[in-house]
Amino acid sequence: MRCVVYNTHQVAEMAGIHKDTLLRWLREGRLPEPHRDRNGWRVFTPEEAEQVVQYANGSLMVPPKKINESLIFYDLRLPYADSIPRLERLEWDFVNTNTGYLTHSLHPYPAKFIPQIPNALIQELSSFEETVLDPFCGSGTTLVEARRLGRNAIGLDANPLACLISRAKAGGIGELDAEILRELAVEVERIAQATSIGRLPLFPDLPAFPGASHRHTFEGIEEWFDEHVIDELSFIKEKCLALTESKARQLALVAFSAIIVTVSRQDSDTRYVRREKNIKPGDTLQLFSRTLAQAIQYALEFSREIDSKLTTQVYEANILDGPEIGPVDLVICSPPYPNAYSYHLYHRTRMLWLEMDQPKFKRQEIGSHRKYSSKGVNAATVETFQAELHTILTWLKRQLRPNRHACFVIGDSIIKGETIKNDELLSEVAVEVGFQVEANINRQLQATKKYFNPKIGKIRDEHIVILRNSEVGDDGRL
Image (tube, rainbow, N blue to C red):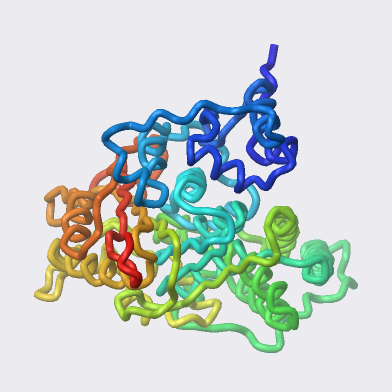
């Protein structure tokens, strides 16, 4: 017999309180913590839910929480200090969990971390309407979870494609946007069918594919795309750019970008080698129509979950240049692993189709395999990454409010055959800059994850390093 359980939102509604109020009561120890499911979400039994209802209406007095003597200082003076032990006890492996819900599956993005990680950290280390920053936002995983949990979200990335994806995934759309996009999907599907059938001898009178007014080109385009695919992608891009509503245009361009590798001769997102795929006339148009229709559904479902009064901001900027975006209440990120991946390479054709400055991002990309595998005098080293971490953490101290947390999800690297413990390197630099290391949690990766560069070793686990900005505030208080 299946056991009935309730989630935090349902219990808060039963008690007639805001969900964030219930989370605060749990953090403060006013009510006992319920169990968590395999996705890291709190689940309440009927008895626990009734206890919350009784506490909310004043008919239940819960005995004071017994204070752990080793945490007295933290309990009295530091925000969210009692959350750290709970995070350390959490099962972080998240085996067999759904990681592609809502807009998380909107666009391929190799080596992204799973949404359950930022979700748990946001719940424990921030409150409703606060601001969460991901300074390496990538495909926007942290931003999506921040908005779902009622926080403002700020993302930063030097990759212009990452910024486009993050804005679309975490920004939401309205019904007008959805209607405009549905019309585009239907129009492209109609043309796809006519193009596909029109090439058959039995239907010689069907109208020819209209094509774009401007055929897109860049150096080497014919090596990576069939002629008819170039024509169809050019047509789709022109249609997307013609949309006048910014959020609709943004989502359409992300759907366009999402199909580019599939219809190219690039083997996959993680293999930059050529192979023939037998893409027929009309296939590219049809794939875009299907991808856009699915994107509309994802974006609408996400939009119904979020508070429209809160915001998502995404900045295209090089973090090493020290852009000013603060103040923020929580930082969650997965920084680039040195020598592990080259996003400028695997996103190259997408960026060229979208007319983004791919060479500029190539120069700015932190941790790229190209920089660390070079044999020249300018090859990046462990000291290169250490210096970059120092710059990044110094910048973070200025953006992050005093005594709030910065969480890094980071794995090991192999540089010149030597294994580099990046969590230890990060911790050492953090202490130098003035952060306190509150936790270093190990999590095992699933066997199919993060094996994107087997030549330099497989990443079998990673660390969640939680830092606290131990700076004293302007009023002299911690």
